[in-house]
Image (cartoon, rainbow, N blue to C red; front, side):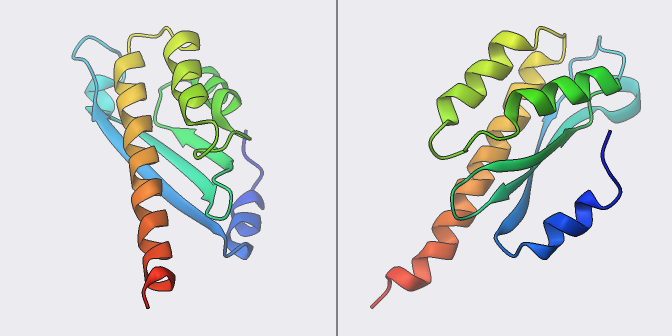
Length: 124
């Protein structure tokens, strides 16, 4: 369960960005009727890529908490393969493929954002 002041803490750190990714859920999963798409949201420090908070639209609190435990604290730069491997091997729910796809989209967004932020400083 998230603390109410957690969002305020994240907002106070200008190094933290929020990235999201979405993927279509399979027709047979319970949350498909409610969402149709599964979302993953990561709060990531731009400087080192560390995931400081994570959330997902998975239906149950246990699944959401498990996902958080799998990814929070890891770096989307130095632990990229481990993040994906953890989710693929530890989350065996029917939404697993959608979860992995949404996560990959988050990671892609972070890397695009990071490249965009670095580009002006790299220019002569």
